[in-house]
Image (cartoon, rainbow, N blue to C red; front, side):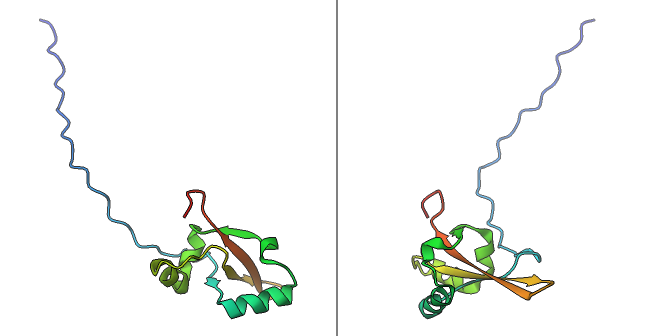
Length: 111
C-alpha cells in the first residue's frame, strides 16, 4: 500500500485591511520635548550666541517630538515645523536638570 498524498489545507486569503493605527504612548524614559515659540527661539539663540544651523539636529519624524502636545497640534494644523527649535529637558544627577536644544530638519522621506 502506497502512502496517500499529504493533505494540504487551502490557505484562505484574509481580506487585506489596514491595521488600526495605535496611539503613540511615550516611554517613561523618553524626556519631554517642547517646540519653542518664535520669541523663545530668539531669546535662546541670543543666549547661546549661535546661529540655528550650529545646533544639533532632530528629524521631523523623531518619536520624541510626539511627547509634546504643542508639536502634535502644529503638525495636525499643517504648519511647517522644519527650522523650529526644540527644547529637551533631562533629569541630571549633578545639574538637577540638563537642557538641550535641537533644530528640526526634514525626514529622509521629505516630510
